[in-house]
Amino acid sequence: MSTTTTPPPKKVNRLGLEVLSYKGSKTTLCAGCGHNAISERIVEAFYDLGVESHKVAKFSGIGCSSKSPAYFLGLSHGFNAVHGRMPAIATGAILANRTLMGLGVTGDGDTASIGLGQFMHLVRRNMPMIYIIEDNGVYGLTKGQFSATADLGSRLKTGAPNDLPPFDCCALALKWGATFVARSFSGDKKQLQAILKAAIAHNGLSVIDVVSPCVTFNDHEGSTKSYSYMKDHEEILHELDFVPFFEDIQVEIPEGEAMDVRMHDGSHLRIRKLHRDFDPTNRLAALAALEEAEARSEVLTGVLYVNTQKPTFVELLNMADEPLATLPQSQVRPAKAVLDEVMEELR
Ligand SMILES: Cc1ncc(C[n+]2csc(CCOP(=O)(O)OP(=O)(O)O)c2C)c(N)n1
Ligand code: SF4
Ligand SMILES: [Mg+2]
Image (cartoon, rainbow, N blue to C red; front, side, top):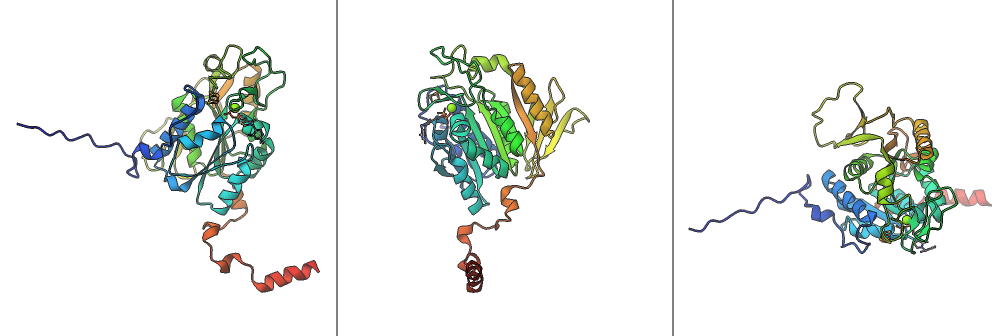
């Protein structure tokens, strides 16, 4: 007698899609590169939340990190910009079509060296997008020169020390106006997943600085961006749980035990304190915590700041709800009388 076995049902998300729909092409980065782990977390976060791929636009500059959008969300839009110029491209695209979810992936060189000016203006404008800095302290793609986030005294493989102080991209983002600022580590799967999900739910600029070791050029003894340095110096601020808007919050939390931040789309970010009191809605406290951690040679990870109230650049400019390219000529072309008036003013 023959028996037929039915295959187990395929695992799908709330859109009925398998995780495969959220993957990209096969990575060409080095095995063990932190950037590969971040790509995996991006795939999981977008799959778990059931984000529609065609509503996502990926942006990057130049670098190993900036190559990585090819390795996730293969069905989304993508634009690989010039080195350090991704913020301008992303700003234009999101202003032209506010229905897109912007996802920028960049490196510490792309952001803090050549692209610092562009990054600052993106932050100042609170552009509604996710901005992930894959931070390895070096220019991986051009063979491991120090970037502007390399710590003072950190050493190259040759033993040469870095004698300039670093830019802390989280501190810059806090100072200049980002409304969601977090630091994580590519090796911390659970924390990075929760941070990415909260960033997807956030309406405003989410700057996520992820320490992401470069195994080829900056993972040796003496480097402060190596796996072993992070193992010894990471100071985790709190435990994070993300409850998406389409799931019921079943567990009531006793007063004082955790902080519940309601995100723009109705999701909740639950922040449980670990060793210390830390209020991620207090910007000055976040800046102070970063300064104190730096003095102790610790790397603070977690959500440093979240502000759900500040208007975004798209809201400030009162952009049309529809993509500009779909507006009829009658709405985008000024009437002759208006043009005549302008010409009159120029006389
Ligand atoms: C205008 C310009 N200047 C310099 C370069 C050379 N270059 C390519 S990638 C890169 C740095 C990449 O470092 P990072 O952004 O940290 O990315 P990683 O490779 O470390 O992920 C540099 C300097 C370039 N491509 N274009
Ligand atoms: S060179 Fe470094 S940053 Fe680039 S892929 Fe290899 S490990 Fe990653
Ligand atoms: Mg780098």
